Length: 421
Image (cartoon, rainbow, N blue to C red; front, side):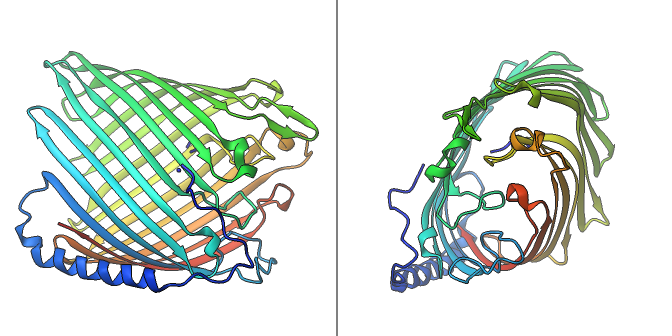
């Protein structure tokens, strides 16, 4: 993927600050549980997915290596693990107006940590999408999104709170100029801003333009060509040694796009071709090569939904030491409907990142890491509007400490309650 909230107004709490009281959080949790019960009791009245629906959630999680520290690190304050609570409340909206369909969602969350209280934050998520039609030949989507979340610590060495704000706007259109042919074009703008001043070199704007044409077979399969241009513009120069450099980049792609309906319950998707990546400064970082992703999904025995993916793609890295990486990986997942109310989910993902640019080009030896992720979850839906989920995960990475991507292991568990009216 070619990577990707506004900062919270409260400031990080120093490590030596006394623990915050938890009474208000427990009170919110109790109220949320009562609200969930009320939603469950009244859920039978919700007869349609259309219209406005409030929802609420409570998530409790434990992570034994919250900051993804190396195996030999004792952790901050001699602590590596922490538990967190997340309270969520939101509204979802879905309504058809003739042939147009408007969907929207607004969600706020309060996330608190037991030990590293300086990470406590208020999350915000907003999104809206309009699926539009003009006559019988023109259609598309128009929308935007806003999110404010805690950025991952996978490639960042710090115990400070680092909120990431993402603002997205997009427009996409399709022209059915023939019963078997469709031309399409779209624009996508993503804006990323980081709350932590030491991560300001990652503040950027991504502008993506895409166009293509597809042939639609009577079987439901498609084949076509896709051209894409992605320009990343960074707000501040990046420090390399004693020199500030312009880290703007541009990536151009021309790919074959295939959607093959193998059977009524099995589909394969392929997007692959050539990608060329260039940089505004230090052009020796420029690179090109084959980029592709193959994915598929199927239904086995009427109760198991399985999916898998293979990829080889360029991706940016949120680091001050390297510019981007060439990622190769594989993933697989399955969802098993054990009964009408019980579902088991499993996922595995393995990826190698070969780092490029900045210090990677002058290191003189291979800079790459390998990560592995496995998860298992069980969901119980006692009523249509209420869901309980328990999940486990295990994550590991083997890397190079030279660029702060050394070895680590992490595992954890989460319990989640969601209710919608």
